Image (cartoon, rainbow over all chains, first blue to last red; front, side, top):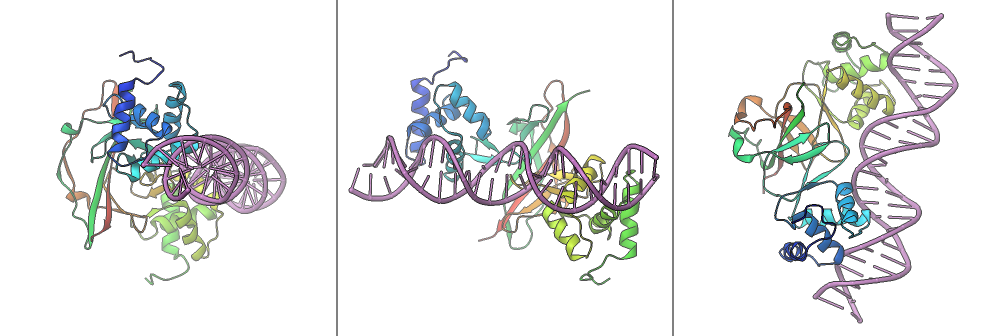
Length: 146
Length: 146
DNA sequence: TTAAGTGCAAATTATTTGCAGTAAG
DNA sequence: CTTACTGCAAATAATTTGCACTTAA
């Protein structure tokens, strides 16, 4: 309930563990912590390795940065998350895995979901001969009005 | 005429120089060469720093990799090109500067324009309060059918 | 002449990997 | 037990930067 609570609730940890189990990933302490931070409240989350590492540290669940990288990679490989390309340098990861549009807040370098029901692609270019569409990424870049 | 010609034609160099002049960029030998390689034939081109560096070397117009990076950055700042985010690591640069869809050929790590007239976005999410849409990036990822 | 551009090498940033120790099945 | 995971430190990859030299205006 308390959004500033520093420790993960048991329900959050359980949700995280279930999420891992669904992908047959070994539920180590680190993975369960990260999973709980990512999906513990049932909402989608957008993180970078760095931001998730910070979240974990602040929740009192320390995990090495290398493990955060490896874990995010593992979660993506397992189909639990997807990588979103918005910025040349950093990589962003999203707990929602279907094709949906994103807002990228340029001044904060933050990524969030854009309301998918407000996006209508009436026509999409055909895939060239012998190719198929793997995914369609839509990123709406935002800046402060002024 | 010869698509395998190793040296830049005078017309290509002239086109490149004009392109620079349009943005009030000092036409150094290196910049004119790179500009000629990018827009010399009047068509859009999608490059990475590495690929453009290779192109220059093969055209007998050697430019240091650092200068290629600095120059691409300068061209973007001047509004002559735009950066396109498709892959976490590498940055891609496009000589076409309006919002238009891209194909990203995953197996070749190659970027190309998708036919813009075949994309129709009937509805786009509203920008959140106090924000405005800076750009809309659409990347269609392609893989071999199979 | 002078401010800007170039090239090298060194620095930075994001990410991955080797390997010894630790823990899950 | 055995194989996979973790964490550190070192390696890698893409890009940027400091600085002495060169060049366009």
